[in-house]
Every structure is written in structure tokens, then in C-alpha cells.
Length: 314
Image (tube, rainbow, N blue to C red):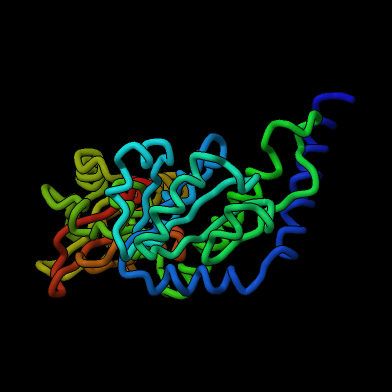
């Protein structure tokens, strides 16, 4: 068997196990979602080994999609960190076997606090399942590992079940892209959804000419402006815009009279404008719609800047 065939076999095994996972869903899934949605505290996720690694990802996904959550290592919890768990918190315990000692040791404390326990295991008859408020069955019939030892299909199933919880909660919360951006202000999405055009626009020494400006003056203005364009104005009124592309096309099509051309002969009279308070996402959408790289920025019907596609950070 060649390497590509091995990869395809892994994909096939794991995809079939994920497809079968829906057969494991019971009312416990819906009850888990509703309890987390109505929770006044946090969702705390805990698990050992590979289950713990997947648990960290589940907690991170929850936290970034509107459900306050963090991962708690069961070993550390049993040696002092149980104090992180409040009475209003819900605890998601993950163990594929449902018999992981470090995880089971937490149950007595959680029950003494009356915490809701969501157990996630591959054995609905396990100790974890029997001691959980709700149990999510992540049983798989086959690991992708040829020795049936390394967690592969089972960890993928755990991850997908966690994603299903997170997505269901997102829909209940009507969680939007702007909400997502609030938790990701440093990412490109957060930048586009939270930053305004005013924050990134060019506002000093704008490349402006009049309708009577000659071609040599226009070229100089475009060159010095370093934005590939010149704005044609009459006082505070915008008459049009000239791009370096307009100049090149005129040079090719009107070679004989090129140096006698004026701004009014070159300009496009319908430049695209945007309000200074608009978000970068809106600017990106406009640029894509009209197939332009620059927008003129207005505030109170007055030109105050230029924003270009290079300013959007995309």
C-alpha cells in the first residue's frame, strides 16, 4: 500500500465514524446545550491525555463563540485547582473509556457542589456516564490506527461532538460575525469588523488637482501622492478621479494629443465614496462589488481622505 492510499484509508475510516456519530445523539445533547445556554457561570472542560488536548480546543472554541469557558487539568484540579470551579459552573468531563481515574476523582466534589456534569465518553455504561447529569456518547467502532491503540477516530469524534455543542449554542445566542470579532480584535476578521475607515485612511497631502490641470501636473500629483490616483476637485466639490490606469490608456489611445490633455479629459466622473465611520468590512465589500482599489472617504459631505485595498489588511 502506498502512502497516498494510507492517507485515503484514514480519511475513509474517520469520515465513516463521524457520519455514524449522529446515531449516538439522544435528548442528553439537547439538554446539555440548554443547560450551558442558561448557565450563570462558566463551562469548565476537563480530560486527561489526548482527551485533554481535545478538551482544550473545545474550551477555546466555546470561549471564542460566546460561551465563557476554560480548560482545567484533572490532575491539577485534584491537587488544589478545584477552587476554580464555582457552584454555578457546568463541568464537561471527557474520557473515551469513561473510566479514567483522574477524571472520576472529580465527580465526588462536583456532586457535593451540585454542579451539572456533562460526561463525554465512548461507553454509555461507564462510571462517568452513570455519574453524569447528561452523557454524550462518542463511541466509534474503529480507530484509524492500524493497531487499534492510538486514539484517532475517537479523538476526532470527541472534537466533532464539541463542535456540535458550540455551533448549537452559537445559533441559540444568534452569535454574529461582529460578536466573533469582539473576541478576536487582533485577527484579520476583528480588524475588518471593528476598525473604521477613518482609522486607516490617508488624510494628509491628498493628491488633488483641478479640471484644468495639465497632464504633466497630473502625472506629478499622482507620482507624489503614491496612491496611483488624483482627485479632480472644484473647491469642495469632487468632479472626478484619475487613476494611473487612465493615464496609461490615454497615452496609448491619444498619443498625438496626449500632452495637451487636461484633467477634465481623463477623469471618471463617478468615483466610489464611503463614510468615514464605515467598518473595513464594508469597504472591502464595496471594493469587490465595484472592482476598484480605492474609495474616497467622506464625512458631513466633505472629502477627508482616501482608503485603499492595501489599507484593509486582507
